[in-house]
Length: 268
Image (tube, rainbow, N blue to C red; front, side, top):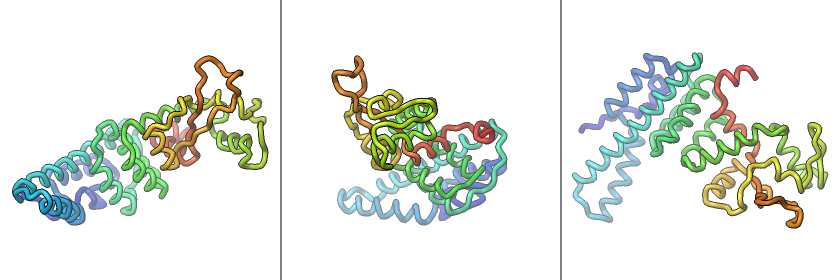
């Protein structure tokens, strides 16, 4: 199979122009022709040539591997673009091309996605950037490239839980007040409720306090934080969680971008 020296769906028209039928059709044609960027080809060449030196496999074998890898990247992009088109059509969204500053790194990262469960999130981010671009979406794309479906599902669960509590939009203010970050300690009266170090655990997303790799990763990325149960053991309820998770302001803004339906965003 001949691999041509064209761009991997990163021609600005091919990536982002309106995501309408004509654009998607041109994207699909580009993907179907297995055209990839010179930069991507160079990175793959370097990877496999070094491996070839170490493993001493026949060069023809590595050509086959490279071709398969490129085809997989193209398939990933195609699925994400088609899902983005479905979202656009379902909600009747009017969109504009995202800037190259977003489009090129987005497609580069999205092409490497190996979990189909993640395609929806990539597609939602692309539509959001095409509808209402914000530079912070570059960070969201970078984060999607670093997490998997396990982490994504945990983020969604925390988001839906947090968005239902009475102080969801001011949770960070309350936590910082009662933990002393703003100078006030022990309690805070907010929205008709009194929150303190002991009862705050009741509204947070419960977990057992064991920091599994997914939680460690999401904390490192600045998406979630942990609040450990301050209630005395003698006053704890049966099966009460030892800690609670909550989204940081950055994490909450990212999930709002990816999980709020377009029509809901317009109402706000």
